[in-house]
Length: 297
Image: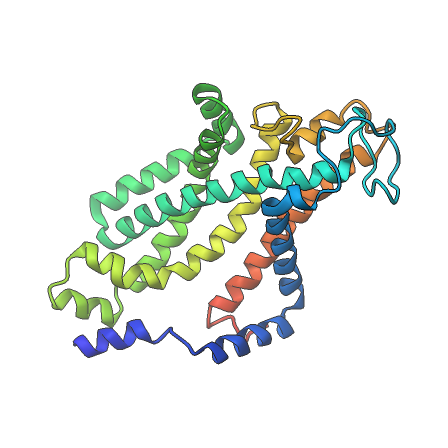
């Protein structure tokens, strides 16, 4: 029995050459997903190293008024004499920073509750499903606005509020995966050996549901970016002149977008590219991580 459990756990570990071949094959079969992954990498790079990449400071105001896109200002300037390209780069830090932070919150809560409810079942599963249904019954943006208004517009508060909204999606996916895994032979073998439920959930079920967690996280980050942009557009974000966000840039362009279309196109395009890239990459990642779909397309 012990040997069977060890083999099941060690089996997913592949040599580095096998991983490289699998990655190259996936890129060849799904070039769109690979391109989306590259776009995600560029966005993450800009969020981390934005101040070192941006050509100007985001609050520098000595540029021409509403200048159209040019070589010196690829995305033009806004109505406050600032360079749009630099502000879009700086805005990636706020938008993606809150996006990834909220995803971390949703993963921690969603994995813990999803595995617990799926494995234990009974009253515990009913209570968790009730919690999920309550969160699903409220409009996402309205509930986030309520939480931010009550607890303040801090980075951590917004991240936790958005993460709480995204938690039900993670719980549903993890719970379904747990229900499929808990009846497998190696779980029953661990149970017959006297392993505690906590050890079984952590040692045997968690590694097998992680591919699903990675996929739902890569898809949910697009939704998190949209919610953060909505909050910033309504003036409830953490952005400022020195620390802009894409949603705030859209809000600032409301009065001049008909006169200067690039003031709204630049941040809107950044949001669209980020959301699309993470969604497409998440779909490709799902196909790559699921053996049943890996060679079907």
